[in-house]
Image 1: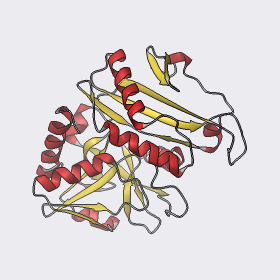
Image 2: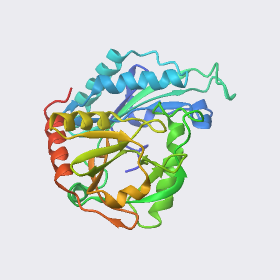
Image 3: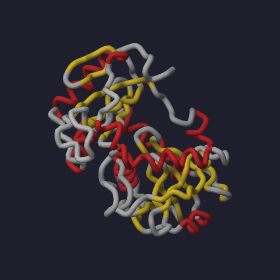
Image 4: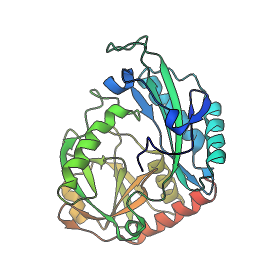
Amino acid sequence: MNFAERDGHIWFDGAMVGWRDATVHVLSHGLHYASSVFEGIRVYGGAPFALEEHYRRLHRSAAVLRIDVPFGVAELCAATRELIAASGVADGYVRPISWRGSGSIEVPGFDAGSHTAVALWAWPSVFGEDARTAGIRIGTSRWRRPDPDTAPTEAKSASNYAIGTLARHEVAGQGFDDALLLDRQGRVAEATGANIFLVADGALHTPIADSFLSGITRATVIGIAGRCGIEVVERRILPSEIAGADEVFLTGTAYEVQPVRAVDDVELAPGPVTRRLQEEYRALVHGGGR
């Protein structure tokens, strides 16, 4: 269904409004200059996972882009819980977003003002239930993650996702489910909306997060691995190393722990380490999270 034509409510600037009434002006600064930040929050059994952590990151991202968010973390958490209760969605996805408004259309947007909204919808799985077991295929894109001096890579900002959109369109035409992005020096970075892990000799290897966002799910999985006695190594990874990996998987709020069955022409099989982390992650989030 078209996202503009749904029933229900969206929390918008401090009040519940009808879904179809939650609109913005065509001359909003956020639309023209990508001056917006957002979050993705999973709801499991009516309980949002890592809720405060996500809203703290929203505020950090907004500070990087100098967007004023007049709603505190506690207020946004309360609004989200109210929205979940009103929607009746037990398992879903929450999308909070803050953006510059239409008070100014000049590049700096000093007087543009700001808005904040929170939406929620049912979303059980990004790639479908079969992909949780069988895995997905990802292809390397020509698009690269930027140098941190050229983009706000530490923020979850809309501007950083344009490259992901381009990459996803590029590899979709080649039959892949998602794209692998390298960094500015040709090293493994991440997928279009998820972090990447390689499993080699029982240990997890993941790129150093300096050209991309270090996800909350990434940190959660690293924590789970530590409790399971699985070594985690954060380091520079070359694309050629993928062929020698035993397993590869992606992590993200939407992706959760997503096995990868192929990277370009390298065939892989979801293995025991990925399966164990999937199970531990599922047990954690369905237990109410943190």
